[in-house]
Image 1 (spheres, one colour):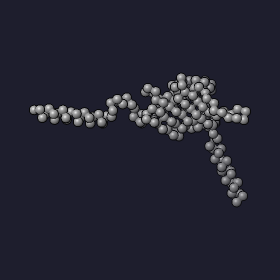
Image 2 (tube, helix red, strand yellow):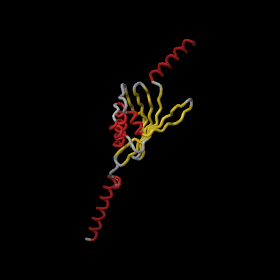
Image 3 (tube, one colour):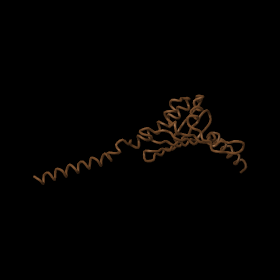
Image 4 (spheres, one colour):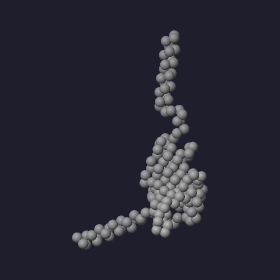
Length: 175
């Protein structure tokens, strides 16, 4: 009889350990799956994009950690350059002044680190201006929030391609 109890307890322990192994650490049950994090990060980036394009303060404030986030870019002043740091509430004021006439956005790169931080390279075309944004997001509680934006304005791809093509034709003429 004693042997049966020992066997029964051993079986319960083995089955319980197998169930825990399949489900993962019970303390981590609230963590989302990597695919869920990617979907959530993309949704926040989309909120940011739609917020700027539509001059929608509510969407922008949902996407950003308004209390701590900043935007950084290079500002040229009288022949010199410096990094300009703009608190996101001020940036949101700028972005909500005018809706975009033309726009396009595309995630070029996305990396999520330990389900806590994400880094996104984002191509953002806005009213015939072309930007590359580097966005940093943190998972705060159960929500992803943008906490930093660093960007540069870059040449329009079509114009750059047309210039390369014209230079190629000119080179062919001289050869």
